[in-house]
Amino acid sequence: MTGIAGGVKKEPERQLGDVIVAEEIVGYEPSRITDGDVIRRFDVFRPAFDLISTAKKIKPESWALSTHVKRPDGKTGRVIPNVHFGVVASGEKVIADNDFVNDLQTSWSRLAAVEMEGYGAALAA
Image (cartoon, rainbow, N blue to C red):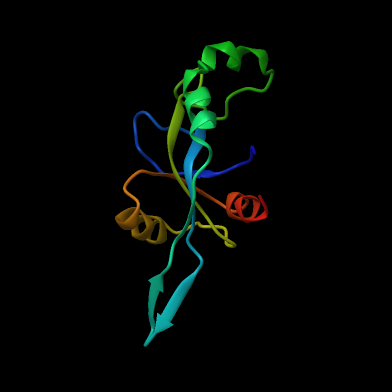
């Protein structure tokens, strides 16, 4: 599945316009709320090992130049995007809060992005 995700900053290597491949989709919405505290009960989905292994063998140079859309990064001038493998947190909300992302990173140190579609797709599959 492809889509748009909010990449978790990790400069200088992770920039706007790079590609994130989910080695795990983590649903962050399931939780228990007690006395104002939210205790997350993460729901984790992992793709087939063969799919990730194959994705790691595909070099960006083999496909990046065939797209006719300019990279949106605007400051690095890179033509070939970097590809990052890691955890993608997925839920029902648009995340525009760095504190929330930092909280997710305390549980998932390899957090690469947050988005809204992967968890639903994983549940449906």
